[in-house]
Length: 76
Image 1 (spheres, rainbow, N blue to C red):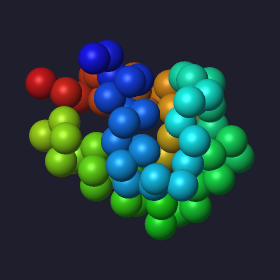
Image 2: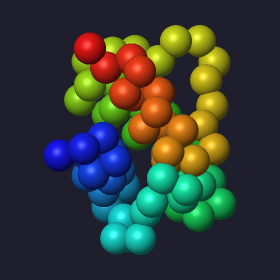
Image 3: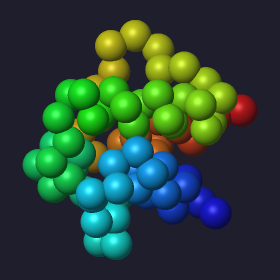
């Protein structure tokens, strides 16, 4: 399973009301998925647990692809 597919699965588990069927790397977290800061924080916690790393500093992602890129760079 690639990073995008795994991230879509995690988003679906954390936010079951979101339809992930059309999520791509260009999907925006806030505008397209409607995530607010609390939802993004919840997904961040799930991502940290799944990929065994912690986000460093004050990081913000606009798109799913940016988040995938970060995960791929920091996932050991």
